[in-house]
Length: 341
Ligand SMILES: NC(=O)c1ccc[n+]([C@@H]2O[C@H](COP(=O)([O-])OP(=O)(O)OC[C@H]3O[C@@H](n4cnc5c(N)ncnc54)[C@H](OP(=O)(O)O)[C@@H]3O)[C@@H](O)[C@H]2O)c1
Picture 1 (cartoon, rainbow, N blue to C red):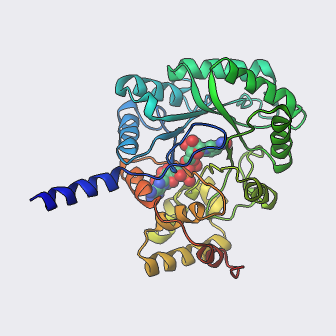
Picture 2: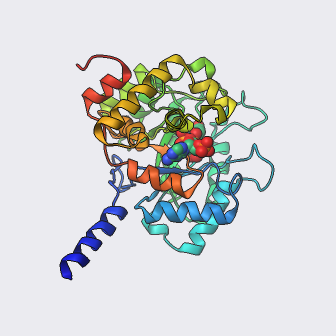
Picture 3: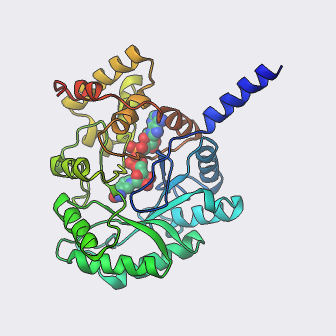
């Protein structure tokens, strides 16, 4: 009887457990998988949003990603994702267990050419996010975009002041180029401060052509960025980490039903080849397609915390189960179509 109970308990613990990664120079140790917040409160109503968040936490997830602008391009409540997470936090009372990351300094949606990396914009966005999330402190504050015309020193000084005031615990960058990240890290070091704790870029198993991006201010993983992460061990938190479901759909034969923008971005001859390779690897190793897709990121030579954009509880569960089997270097090389080093 005891052996049966122990076995059941072991299975429950295995279901709950998810690897964590400590971000450099912080006491933040988020789950390796991060739940993306775009659909919360907009594409999904509050009941379905709460169900998604509950399912993620039940599977051991502790890392949530949102942004002040999510999803202001849709009609309805402004800053709906942050506000929905804020109401869920109030209802569930698990704030201390979670690592809440949000982003500011995004251009106004009607003026994407006008950067907002000045102090006043960063502070105004952050204060709005704190109100939306109904929290005193944001664990990880991402700069959603960059402005190469604004010196990194001015940006870092602003962020450091927000840490001193207790409004954020750590900061990171999203959609920044390698040379700007290197300059920011060097400035932080020269001041004796922690630099960016992580970097968020577009990256997945799918090869992406920069020219096919719908928004030119998005930065995809490239060779310079990759080398920077390898050299410094800076954690990456890639978005669109499942290539919008491209590989799962290709395996199921439902690519025709994928939305046109995602299909333009991902449905290329190279990604069809990668998809065949992913299916062979899944069959050979007993992994799911999602496990190959996420395992590709988790097996890289620096810490990677994929951000997944699930729309259903089943996708949350599948993604959480899939975040346990990093590919080895030879598998990554093979799936990319190059010989192992
Ligand atoms: N920093 C930035 O500039 C930036 C930009 C974009 C996103 N983000 C962040 O990254 C998050 C994720 O972005 P994303 O939604 O583009 O990522 P994604 O995970 O690549 O795409 C989400 C889509 O993938 C499919 N999917 C997810 N899990 C699946 C599973 N287990 N099996 C099969 N299909 C699955 C679903 O497609 P279907 O709906 O077709 O089923 C889902 O809507 C966002 O919520 C946001 O937090 C950041």
